[in-house]
Amino acid sequence: MVVPVRDKFILHWLDQSRSHRVLWLFELLGLDYELRVYLRHPQTWRGPKELFDVHPTGKVPIVEVIFADGREPLKLAETGHIIQFILRYYDHNHILYPKNPMEQLKVDYYLHFSEGSIQPILITLLINNAAKSLAPFGLKRVTKIVSKGLNNGYYLHEWKLFMNFLEKELAKNGTGYFVGDKLSAADVILSFPIYENIFDNLDGVKECTGEKGDLRKMYPHLARWADMVGNDPSYIKVTDLMEERSEDLIRHAPRYSYEPTY
Image (cartoon, rainbow, N blue to C red; front, side, top):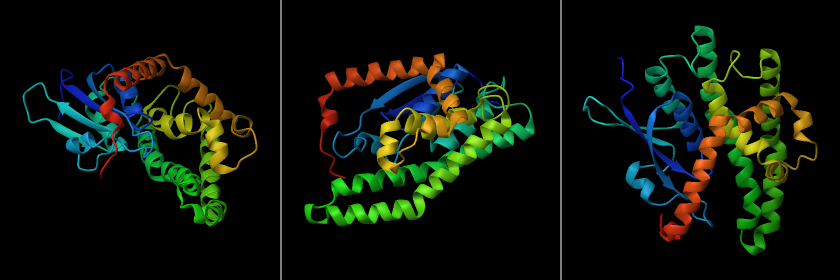
């Protein structure tokens, strides 16, 4: 199956979400895409109910593929699944998917590692940190003790295990990238858990983990890699674009501040 590059894509994008790296992927591959922008509710942190009209889970990223030959459009969800599909059918020049089969396997591994291993740990640390402020007044102290015990007993150990693993992988590869000697889809998918969640959010990470050390010194290879991501021209381009689009939506679409009923 060879899909022509004339195909178009609709990306449903939510602020501070995993959808941003799919936008970066589209930009890196030069694909023809349209954006549908949504904002989180400021208190509940949920996306708007309109997302449930797009996909039953209401989660992003969601990508709609509009085929140039008139076939029925295809709707895709889950970041790793979306990226694998795009690499298979649209990265004909191996911009982000290496030609070497062993390097392809490594890219595929990171697509699953990002979503199946490190991201759930980060989400749990975030939830446990927020639990003490969300708990009823009389239970805040108990909730803080329990959540801290869970983190210290399991989640922080797993987070450090994964961070050390990624630090050693970068050192072993020796190119500044996770696979090969140039940017790949592995770097793209890891941009959310490692760059956005951690190195572009150091104060938040310290609050969630209680880590008092300098993370940039503890993980120097990851820190340099994160600087590479944050300074990539195409990443800067899409980030600036979405900051502008989000601010415009806040100004002109106050309906996105509704209180969700689901």
